[in-house]
View 1 (cartoon, one colour):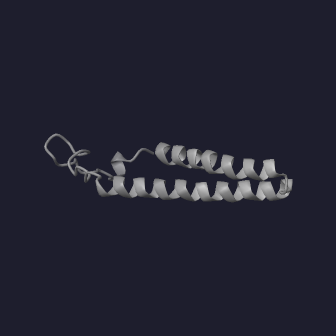
View 2: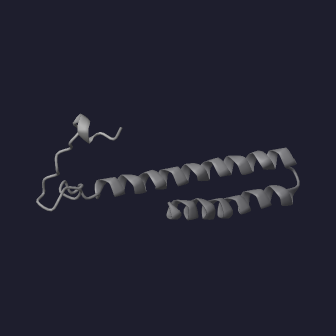
View 3: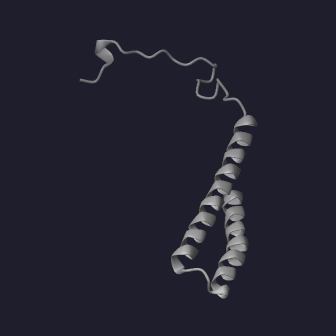
Length: 91
């Protein structure tokens, strides 16, 4: 997740600085047009982040170890039976 965030942030700063500074320096773009451009760039960078995060989650799920079935059982590997008779129920 951190990698996706950093890549998206760097992409926004690199592309946004070039495009937005170019629009501002030339003076032909209005403030609303520049805001729209910035929001469009932010949306594209959000898409980059979502792609990298999804890729990371898919890789993590693919290489996940299977759960140990004996991890929550007793020392013998068999869990104790649950006694739910009426005399053992708190009342």
